[in-house]
Length: 251
Image (cartoon, rainbow, N blue to C red):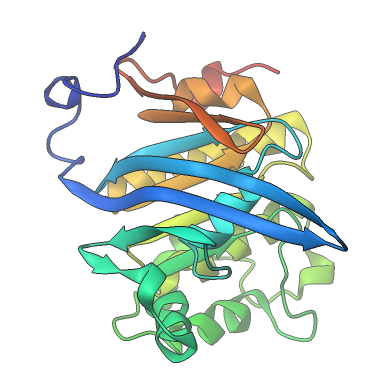
């Protein structure tokens, strides 16, 4: 069941979930649309613990992608602060934000964003070349189930296989957190469930913090923490004491 955001950590997997790794304090983001100011994010405050599987849930236009872009260092807040491992990322200049994106976070997008003229393995190698402490590529390709497909080009792979390459690329650089923007949005149900299972396995086996944003409320059941956002505001931040397995999700 989903309970209060505080006080339930001890009931969960202590070997996997550690102390706070990410903290948002009053994050606000405004966009100027001609003479109109649009507030996409309003005073968002929360903590995420190391090793958690977090689902950020909200409808289209709710501000969840804006929030993920700020957490990933791809955008800066208009107001508020954001910390990763104690470092104030919101105070970084462009050079330090580039380093943050390279070394601290991995990205998984809805439409894969692979280099079409590179093989699956070469796409993953690109990420390890800019990493301070990369993981073994052979091990990663095996983990994502592409050990026998690593020499294929994206055009020779199914949508699910391309998303597995995208995940392999993201985790190969050994980031502190994996940020996933609607990772099942372009996939059918069966393939989507397999991708969610892969992300859960990465979370459990590598003890990597995984943050998934989605509009699909059924996916929330697999999160250790669920952050619901609507009209730019966080309306719920709760701990799920009994997460379900991806195979038990239906939508």
